[in-house]
Image (cartoon, rainbow, N blue to C red):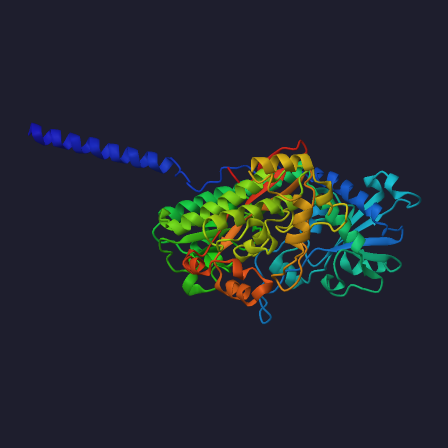
Length: 546
C-alpha cells in the first residue's frame, strides 16, 4: 500500500512539473532567430533642408531658371503587370529626383512643381539660397469613387504639407491653368508626364537635369546613415542566406531569393534595390540572372559542389545598397573553384585599398584590371610569353570580367553621375603622391606607367575594341560624401568566349589559354561586391560588412 501511495505522489509531482513547464512555455515568447538586429535611422523631415539648399544653388547656377519658369517632376505611375491585365506591378516607388526633394510622398500619377520666386539678376553664383524664395507644390490626380473604394484616397493636404515640408497640394486639373504663361522645365521627356498635361511650353532641360545629378553626387551625413542602414541590413541578410547555402538540405535559387526579401522586409526595408539575383553553378556566370523565371531550374535543389552567387540588396527610404557574395554549396569547394574565388578576392582587396579621397576612380579600376591580369596570368589562363602590359593593352582581363569595376550608389542602385567636366577630371586632379604610395603598397608601383592617363588612353578608349565600339569609362576624383561599389568578378561564359574568338586579331583571344579555360566552364562565375563610402572627415568605410 505504501508503495502504491508513493507511486501516486510521484505521478502527481511529475504531472505538476509538466504542467508548470508548459505554463512557463506558454508565457515565454519564442525567440525569433530571424529577428532584425537593427533600428532604422529616425525619420526627420529636416533631412530635406540641406538637400534642397544644395539643389537650389545648382539650379540657380544652371542658367535655365527665370521668374517665368517652373520645374516639374513626374511622381511615377503604378504600372500594369501586363498589357492584357488590370493587375498592378508590385513595389511602386518614386523616381530618384522626387525622393531627393520630397521623399516618399504618397502621390502617384502626379507632379511635383518647383518655382523660384526671387529675382534673377547679375551673377547668380553669388546668390545665397533662401528657402523662403522657393515654392514646392504637389499636384495629385482626382480619384473616382470606384478608385477611392478600391485603392483608398490620399492623406489630407495638411498632413502632406507638414510631413514633406512643401508649400501646397493642388489637384492636377489646375496645373495647365496655373502654368499657361510659364516655361515648363523637366528632367525627363514629355512621354513620362501624366495623361492630359498640356505640353505646349514643355522642355526637357539638360541643365536642370545635371543640377539634380550634381547635387545628388555627394551625400549628406543623414543620407550616408540611410545608405549604411540599407547596407547593414542587406549584409545581415546575406549572412543568414549563407548559412542556408552551407547547411540546409533543401535549398533552391527561388527559396534563397525569397528568404532574402523576407529578412530585409523584417528590417524596415520595404523594397529591394533590384530583383535578387541568385544563380547556382553555370547560372552564376549570367551577370544579371533572372532568378526564378525558369520554374524548373528556380525550384530545383542546389547540389554540391557548386558556387551559389547571390547579388541582392534592399533599399531604405529609397537609398539603395548593392552586395554580392559567392558561396560554395555545403562548403564543398574544388581546387578550381577556390582558385577563382581567391583571385577575385585579391582584386577586390587591392581595389578597396586604392579607394580613397583624392584618388582617381580610374586608378582604382586600373588596380583591379592589373591584379586580375597578373593573377590570371600566374594561374595559366594566358599563354606563356605574354606580358602584363601587353595583356592590359588588349583588355585581356575583359575576357573573364565583361563589366566595369563598380558604380555610384544612392537613390538609385546605379546612381547616375553628372557629366559636368568639373566632375570628370579625376585623371588630372588625382593626388599623384597618394597614387605612388598606394602603388608601392600593392607592389605594382615601379611597373606602372602613369596610371590614370595611361589607363584612360589605352584601357578605356582602345586601342583595341571588344564591345564593337570604342568605350569611354567614366573617371572621377573621389571626394568626401561619395559612395561606390567595388565588384570584381571572373566568369566562364561560353557565348562571350565565342564572341571574343570571333574578333580575331582585333581582340585578345590569341593571348588566352583556351584549353585551360574549357576545364573551368562548370565553375560558372564568382563576384564579390561591397559598398564603400568616404565621409566628410575622409574616413573610408565598407558599409556592407558587419
